[in-house]
Length: 398
Image (cartoon, rainbow, N blue to C red; front, side, top):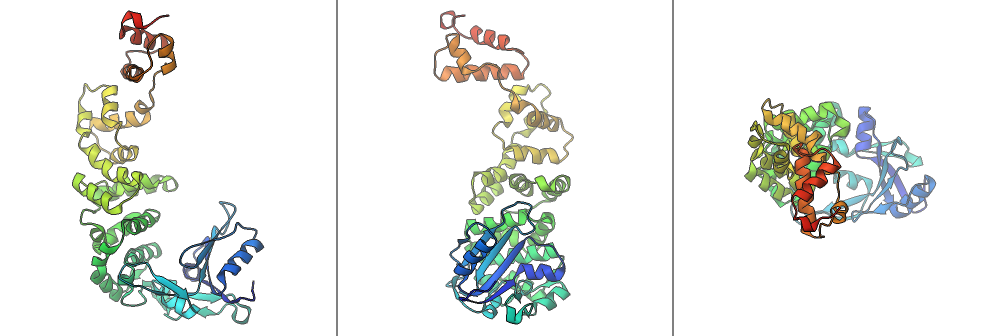
C-alpha cells in the first residue's frame, strides 16, 4: 500500500531478524518515512482493524481481532532519530530517514529493514552488518555509548542472546561491564518492565544465570540474587505447565532464596504493584512461620491462622521444593482444602435467631468456621447450636 504523503515503507527490526533465522513471528514492525499517522489509519481501514493508538515516541499499534490470528499485532514506527539529554533518560525523537532510524537501534541483528516500496521491493537495508552477525550468531551493540544512553539494553542483550542461542560480542560484554552502574539511574518502573519481559521468556533460568554472571542482577539491587533452589523450582514450573505460568508464581519462585531484608529491598527497588511486593516478600514471611506446621498436634484452624496471610503463590513455591517434612503435607492441605472451608450459616441466619447486628456477627461466623475446620460441627444444625451455646439465652429465639 502506498500513500501520497508516505515516501517509503519498510518491514524492520525483530521481524527481519526472525525472517532470516526462519523463526515464526506474530508481530510485524513497519517503519515509515513520511506521514505515519495517515499510513496507520489507512492500513487499519484496509485491514478492518480498530484505529491505532499513538505513543509519545511516534509509534502506532494495530491489534489483530482474533487471539489465534497468524499476526497478533502490527507496530508502525515513524523513521526517527533519537537524542538523550542524560544517561538513562528517555529519548527525544525527531523524524528521520530509514538509515538514521536503523543506526539508533539497540543491536545490529535488530537494525535491518526490508523495503516494501514498489521501486525497491525486497531490498535489504543493513547499515551495521546485522546479517553477518546473525550468521556468526552474536549480539553486538551498535555504538559504545548505547548502554549509557539506555541501560535497559544490557538486559535485552542477555535476553536476545539466550533466546536465540547466540553469544555476546566480547566488546559488547566489556561495554556492559563498564556501564552496569548506570542501572541505578533507571526508575523502578523501567527496571520492573525489563524483569517482566524476562519472566515471559521460555528460558528464564538461563537468562537469570547469565544476568547474574554479568553482575546485572546485583546492578538492579545488591539484594537481588537467584539461588540454586529458586532456579530449580522455577524450572520445574516451566516444565510442568509453561502455558499456565502466571507472573506471580514465577516472581515468587525466582526470588525464593531471598531473606526478609533482601526481599524488602528488592521489592522496594521494583516499586511495583501489590502483586509484585507480595510475591517477593511472601516467601520470607512464610519461612518465618512454616516450622510451626511440623507440630504434630496442630489443628486445621491453626494451620489457617498461620497461612491465611501468606500469598498462595509463595505456598505453591514452597511445596515445589519437595520438602519431606510434615509441613509440606499441611501446606498442600491448606491449598487444596482448608482455605475453601466456610460455615453453612450466614449473617442473615444469625440475625434471624436474634443475634444483634454488629461486630459480633463476624466473630461468631469465625468461631463457626474454626469449629467446622476442626470437625467439631458438621451440619447447619450443629453450627446454629454452637452459636446459641455462646450467647446469653435472651439474645436468641427459635
